[in-house]
Length: 395
Ligand code: FEO
Image (cartoon, rainbow, N blue to C red):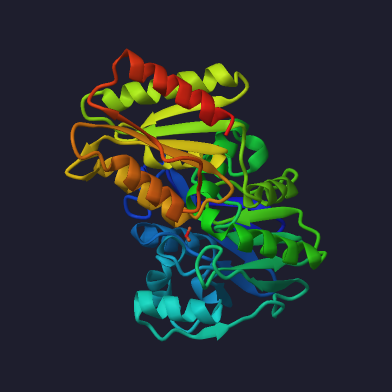
């Protein structure tokens, strides 16, 4: 599929990437692939909104040329300069080098930084309008959602918000509308996307949504740059974003650990037992960080009211899988969540202190000094772990 009708004279001309397994280099797992959404608006004037990732440049431009004489494109709108949306610009601009590119001031800097080309840039700000004939595009800057250059645009008449990354999800489907796909898969990909990409910008997410709502523009559709188009009750995802942006948490405690000789695993499982024994309503989940998908774990952390993080001590430090996810968690700036640390040791025993300090630096409310067990847990220490879980569940 290389084209679908979105509404009236608006069509999708993007690329479905069924094979994508990792995004942002190796940073984000895309179990269900992704899409790079580009939109063609053929009114009296013709506008193209965003492009696709560079490996699909030639295919994109060929498909686009099959839809329209490229020289008839009056305006290119670059809502976001990141390569997954601007990657086909060099190939496209080879054909139509003078076509104006509308983007934010930061967008010019980013696009020049990526491609080192002095294209015909037109800087736009919030409230600026571009006439397409009877309809207009209205631009809305959205800095740090999630790059400094990010912006949305809104098509009057058709009442479509082109939101770029916001409200998107890495989800490949032949059925490009929200009402046509599996709802649980869709929402699982949406929350993963929010948790892993937008969490650090939550305050700005809430502010920007309130600002856009204050314009009073009717929104019949939200056309994102990844995944499906929201056409059935599009405000549902907007309301969901407001909840996620507000220190979101469910009644869940997540235990993350890695283990060398199973001692820390035994601790993890017995802490979980204690939590469940004290509160049978709480959802307790365990993840061996070294064996599970990092981004799926981050999503579970996002959903949690509290986390318990464990590592044995190695070389006066912690296992690299635990260090890696703690670094990621730190960058995501979670707030309003409790945490504690645990781990086995043989002699020096620094791991619990290191994890505790990292969790504190990362904005978690660490409720005590953590639980250390010398060598493998014996029966007495297993009881201690259960008690520790019971105590933590009510902390
Ligand atoms: Fe989908 Fe920020 O790029």
